[in-house]
Image (cartoon, rainbow, N blue to C red; front, side, top):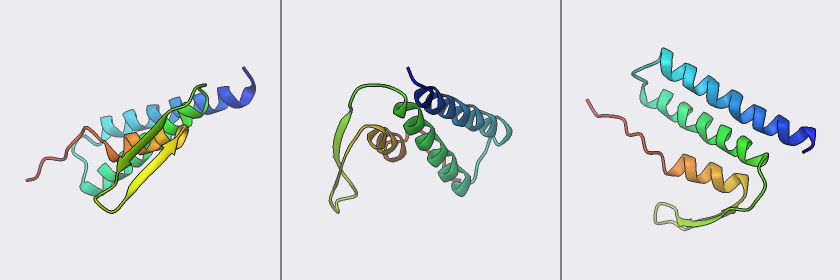
Amino acid sequence: MDASKFLMIGAGITFISSLMAMGWFIPNPTIFQYEVFKLVASLSGAAFALGLTGLLDVKFPLFKKGSVKASGAFAVFCLIYFFSPAVIAQQ
């Protein structure tokens, strides 16, 4: 494995660790903070996927306005960003 794969996997692990730290110190995020967390999680998943071999193809509808067809790291980004399991409780 060359150095670039180790760098991408390391970047993904670093982003995931920073996301865990933000979640620890901000237990009740605002909607904006939640969106930032979701973006960081998506980027970290994509960075981690860059270091792995293989191919992932996804195609899914996007808000009834079209569809997204992606493969590789961008597919991982889309899956994490658009299909977030966490839901903010409305007060």
